[in-house]
Image 1: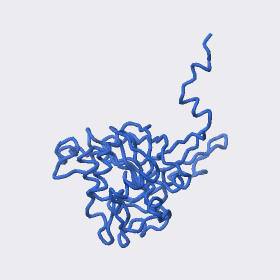
Image 2: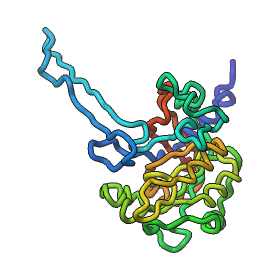
Image 3: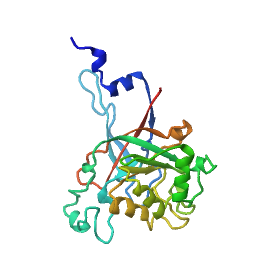
Image 4: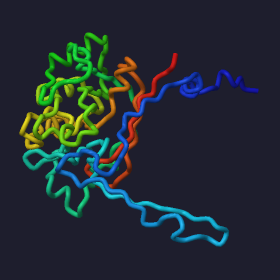
Length: 278
C-alpha cells in the first residue's frame, strides 16, 4: 500500500491548509469606464424566462454580450501594438493582420499564467497610501524605493503589478479615463526599468497602464512600445489592487487564463492573487 500522506501533491497540500484568494478583476457592467479607442461592453437577454416554457414548466434564459477585447480587466496580446510597421517578432504588422486575425501573436498564443506575482504599492511607499495624483509619472526611482521599502525582490519571469491607487476612481467614468485629469503610471523610463527585470507580464490599476498627462488622452503610449513590441512582455490593465495592498500582500501566486480568442489583440481576464493563510 502507498503512504497517502507521502503522495499528496504539495500544491494540493497547500490549498488544503488554507488559502486566501484576492480577485483582481473588475465586474463587467454596461457603462463602465474604458478607453475611447475600443467598442464598449453591452449585455442583453435575447431570451427571458417565460418566453418559452417546456411541458414540465421549466424555462431558461440566455444572454449575449458584445465588447472590445481591451475593455474591463484585460490582457494585451503581443499583436496589440506595432512600431514603425513591425510587431514584436519583427513581422510586418499589416500583413500579419490580413484575414482579420493575428495567427502568430494573437490572444490564443498567451498560455495560462501561474507564476509568482509581485505588487509594488507605489503610493504607500511614497507616503500617500490613498493614491497618486492624475498625470503623475512613476519613475524608476519610485519603483526602486517601493521595492526597498517593501523588502520586495523581482525575479525573472515574475508578474509585476503596479498600484497607483487610481482604481478608487473606477466608478467615476471621466476621472478614471483621465482625459482632463491625466492618469498616473509609468512612463518610458519606468517601463524600461520593469523590462530590464525580465518579467513575464506587468499590470496596473489604470485604464492604459502607463502615465497619461492631463489633456493628452491616449495619443502617445511609449510604455506599450517598450513592453509589448521591444521586449515581448504582456500588459494587464484595469486591475483591482487596493484590497491586496490593504492586506499588506506584496508577494503571492498569480493566476490568470485568457480566453482562447483566435487571432485577437487581447482578452478579458479575471486574474487572481492566491496567498497561503499560513
